[in-house]
Amino acid sequence: MSAATLLALPDAVDRALIVATQAGLPLVPRPYHELAEKLGIGADEVMQRLTRMQERGVIRRIGLVPNHYALGYTYNGMTVWNVPDERIHLLGPRLGALPFVSHCYRRPRYLPDWPYNLFAMVHGRSRAETDAQVEEIARLLGDDDRGHAVLYSTRILKKTGLRLAGRGD
Amino acid sequence: MHRSRRTETLELGTLERRLLNDFQHHLPLTPAPYAAIAEKLGTSEEAVIAALQELQGAGAVSRVGAVFRTHRVGASTLAAMAVPPEQLQQVADLVSSYDAVNHNYEREHRINLWFVATAADEKQLTQVLEDIEQRTGIAVMALPMLEDFHIDLGFDLKWT
Image (cartoon, rainbow over all chains, first blue to last red):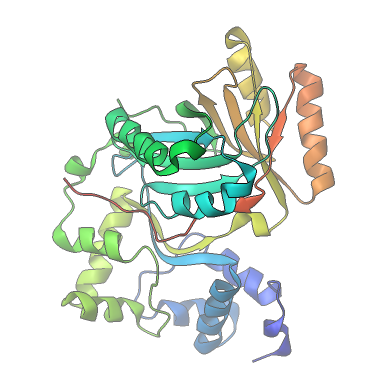
C-alpha cells in the first residue's frame, strides 16, 4: 500500500480506477481481479481503493444502477419548497430520507421571483403517483411549507449527450 | 426504444427483481462478489451473472458499478432560464450545444429551461453562464447546491 492512497483526494491510480469502472464492473466471477490486471495493480489494492473512496464519499455506493425510465418511472417532478432557513437542517434530512426522493438539496433563493430554498426530486410511474408524493411531503412539512411548486419535465433536451425521450406516454 | 418500455413488458424474473431491489448498494468488495450475492439469494454464481447480463441487456440496469458524487470533481451548478415559449427550441439548442452542459430539461413553469453546467473551476463555470446570457439576452439563474440532504439508500422500486 503506497502512502499516496492515504491522501484525501483521488490520486492517479484512483482516477484510473474511476475511468476503468465508469462503464460498469465486468460481469465475470472475479471482476476486481480483471480490473487489477488492466491497471497493473493487485486485486487487494483495487478493493481497498474502492472501499476508501466509499468511506471518503467520492463514491456514493457500488451496486446495480437502475435505469428508471426503462423500469417505467417516466415521471420525474422537481419539487421546490420555501421553508424557514432556521428549520432547514431539521427538514432537509427528513425529505432526503423519503424512499421516492432521489436528490434533496438546499439551493439559494432569488427573491422575489424564486422564493424556494429546498429541492427534492421525486419519481413515479404516473402523474397520480408523483402528485401523492408531493402531498406526502406537504403533510410532512406542515406549517413549515411557506409555498411550493412542482416542475414536471416535459422534455429531456439533453442528457449526457445522447438521451432524448418523452414522458413515455 | 427501450426507455419507453414498461416494467411489465420487461418481464423481470424473481431473481432479477431481488437483485434490482437489494443490491443497489453494498456490492460485496470481496474477490468473488457475484458468488457472495448468490449465496445470500440461495442461487448459483452463474445464475447471478446471467441475470445481471440479462438486466443490462434489457436496459433495466445501466451498469453494475460505482455511483460517484460528481460535484466533488470540478465546479457545477443547476441553472434556469425563463424563455419565451416561441424561442424555447432555439435557446434550448444553443444551451445544449455547450460541452459544459450535461443535462438540459424543459419543465412546466414560467422558468422553463433547466440545465446542469459543469466546468473545471468556478471561474470557467461563471464564464459559460455569462456567455449564455449574452448570446440569448435572457437572465440565467444559477442555483448551486449549498447542502446535500439526501440519504442514499438506493431507489425503492415497487412492483405492482
